[in-house]
Length: 239
Image (cartoon, rainbow, N blue to C red; front, side, top):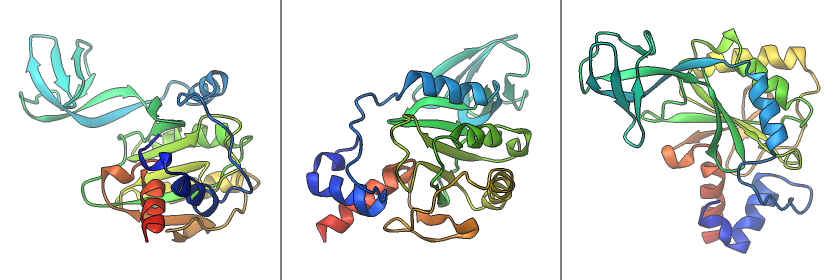
């Protein structure tokens, strides 16, 4: 929950003009979502792991190392758990981790690509996918498959069965280098699941993009996940 969401006007605008809800949204008391549904989405990843390049090597020993992303420091002692193996203290390294991120963003189940989450530094795109509740597990499974092994992106899916009556029930944050690959993955998914998405329209602040999806250009880390929608809604109400 962001500070902007405490303003009733911003909440109304965000719900009706950005999420394009047909009516009042549900009361979602648990930011972590429905535990059974989240467990099901996690199971759909089939334990997929990937490389997370958000870490630096802090210290090494004979067969162990400490790595940190600036907030979290981890001890690793399993061979091949980070690359490159010849990295020195201070170097950027990739750590092999589960791609599912159950509590990364409030009210969202998140999944990284096989090469990690979205790269923010040079601008990135947001693809809004109005996936149905019934098709959400299949979307997670597709994005956790081998076809995403070489891609960097962040998939965010509503983590409650009651929160799918919106134009952004799922979204993907992806950098320019990986966007073509993500679009090919989604195109294949839509061919296999032609009823996976609903036609809810184009949210405020977005444009009609490829595959009949709404698309927007994001600014910085604050626009990740639901940040973009709240920012644009706040700006609109302020004007």
